[in-house]
Image (cartoon, rainbow, N blue to C red; front, side, top):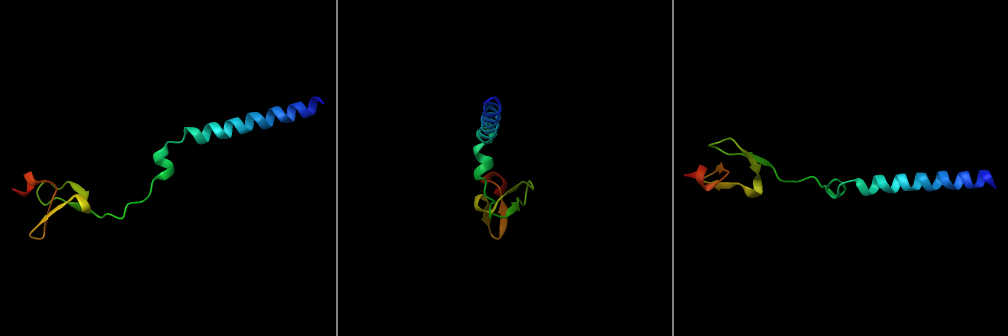
Length: 69
């Protein structure tokens, strides 16, 4: 009966360790998906911004209205 208790204790400790590691992973790491947005450089300050956040005026890319002026 002693070896059976030892096996059960080892399995419980191993299962606890595995669950602990899973719970410690940040949520963003688990659900992080690659973005399909291209990065564009601002014509004035050269800051790179996602295409969906860029201001495009007369075919030129700007990061903000301040740079567009």
